[in-house]
Amino acid sequence: MPLLTAALALLSFIGPLSTDMYLPAFPRMADELGTDASGVQLTLTAFLVGMTVGHLVFGPLSDRYGRRRPLLVGAAVCTVGTALCAVAPSLGWLVALRFLTGFSGAAGVVISRAVVSDVVQGAAAARLFGVLMTLAGIAPILAPLAGGAVIGGAGWRGVFWVLAGVSLLVTATVAVGVPESLPRERRHAGGLRRTTAAVREVVGDRAYVGYTLAFTFGFGMLFCYIAGSPFLLQNVLGLGVRTSAVAFSGGAVVATLSSAVGARLVGRIAPEALLRGGLTAMLVGSSALLALTGAGLLTVFVCLPLLAVVCGGFGLVVANSAALALARVPGASGMGSALLGTAQSAVGAVVAPLVGLGGEHTALPLFLGMALCSGVALAAARVGVRGRGAPLVEGHPVG
View 1: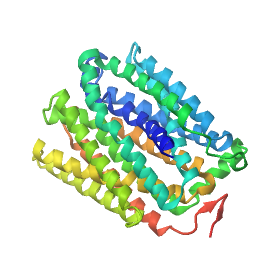
View 2: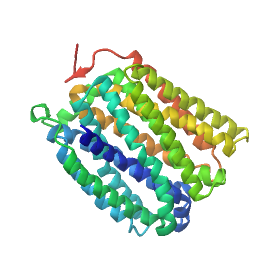
View 3: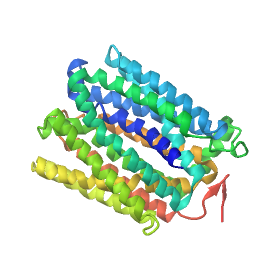
View 4: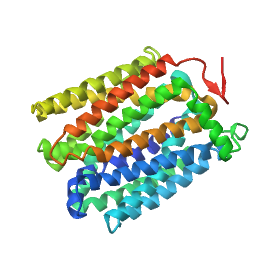
């Protein structure tokens, strides 16, 4: 289990590294590629759209062919695509290649969650998800710092060469550390009819839908922050590239510590309560930031502590919402995980460019998006709690 946990944590690194490591370069990329904030944020949107499609492909494939083979193929393609991003000649090429890396990188995200669901259930699953998020939290802590250092010496293209090397390491680790977790007798035959039936099974469970929407819009809040933070920290608050990278990493530290605490509390405090507490903190913090910005009172000294409140709340959301959702569909965990990731990436792809529509020198669209996503997530979690009953397996209640 320790080797498997380490391998799954490395798989979780790809997403945060791919989105966070080049964030400090956004203003510089806009100048070099002859575009504006929304144009650069389109590269992030393309990555998230690719992940959306990839979840829909790799989730069902892993239910049909097992977890290991699709996982290895996705990791290998992601490595090649990331290397090509480093030599992209234009914004259009970069957008297309980011779609490819998002599509292939989705394999690691969706299948790693399915593997967890294969090997553990219930509170143990929530605890393992929490451990994985804590370990994976190293990536968003180090990514902006490493990105700032690489950008200073090798420019934004150097970031993608580093990411390609990391992706190659992840591929090798998966080959050694992730055995097949789905026996042949539990695999589905596949096909459009089977896939459609699996989707109906999963979305027919009200609690699953509620927890999935809580997970999705929790990440929607995060993607608002990811897309807008370079301009918030550098253009609105006036921080330098390296200082803004440190500030962003500080939020990741808070989220990681919060996740670690949540993982230890599972068993003594119900996952539903931890989820509700995290979402409430997100909503309160982001609403306060929105109000202060609207009143013209936003400063570094009030912004960063409130962002820490939001990040601390987020640290309690991901593991608990994912575990609660997948516990509802133990007979279709691949599809359940695929829909989790699809909804997550789709919402992220929509919100990422929207936070830049107000320009590079205002934070109002950013904090409005964060507050709206947090509010929707909290309402969805309540739907999940009200819809609890026996989980579904192959379309039939268990228990």
